[in-house]
Length: 207
Picture 1 (tube, rainbow, N blue to C red):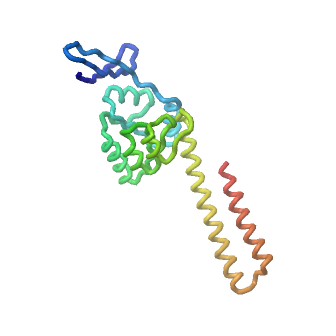
Picture 2: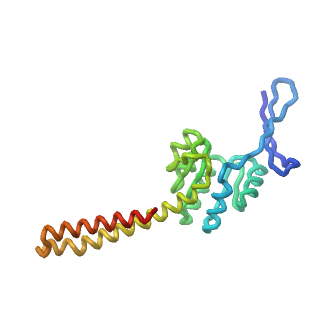
Picture 3: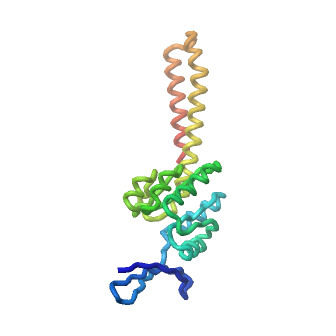
């Protein structure tokens, strides 16, 4: 049994990949298939590009298939025939340049890169190994919520920093007052409650 692979662009302008199979002396036969965009992939890419984010497509597939898919998504930076270590190396190179990398992958060959990225996401239909290696697993099949999740994460970090500032300011002012005996237990309790309520209300702004 012999296996081979080829790539061509069909008349319908969709890139087709073919796996050739030959058993014994029989002539090889082609099994052709075309890549299908995941639901919400075009929306996610467009949203990230609108935010000024750099989007890269790194795949182990042949150049024709990857280039055609990148063209449909409007991705200018793409790499084909990438091995698992190539994907991880690309992420490490971006990190060395000071970038924060979000990796989205669903295959076994993506696990190393998913682990190397700052944040990694896999869809629910991904292989078990990819889901285990990811920080976030989407409950649905669509990739459209990914930019929204990234935006929520950024706002959450901002709220956390604000809450730390509020807590730090409270302690800088309240602790010395309590140490010199200028605050009664009632005033101290009210001040502590006010600080906690302020932090909670600020966190609710995330919605």
